[in-house]
Image (cartoon, rainbow, N blue to C red):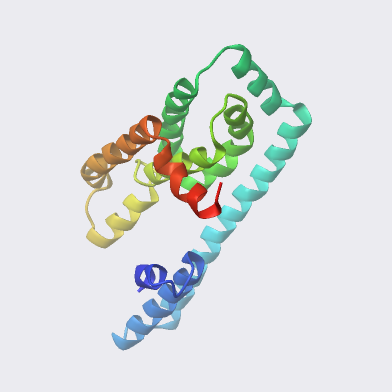
Length: 202
């Protein structure tokens, strides 16, 4: 229902999430499992998750403001240029950093906490911001299946009841595929940039 509405162009991903909620409520009602305690628990879970993301975004906003005042991103960008760091070396280093961060943080936390520092450095050494955006999405997806905080692992655990680290072991091939995608992007940058630039005439 969710993916179908997205792929058919009926709804955006955000709207598709709402469609999924309505669908879940209808299924619960049809199966005679919908009750007020269950509905209340679902609402509380949504509030907790939304509050967590809101606090992260608020903290990231303060961090970005502080970074701007201290000039740390500009200093890092200047240092990267002076040190002669190549784009490939930077991406390899960032990949290691994002993998480690994926052990402790979810995807959106990684993005909002690092982008204000990393993006000036990326631009300074000549990495295409569009290419970097695609790369960052892949690394965020990797964080979603990296234990012990990978959200997708918890989803699978709730559905199957299997041990979390057992599920993480099964996720290893997919982690390898995502890392291979990063290697492909490094070898063939046009994989990330050709279609958007063709569509915009750039």
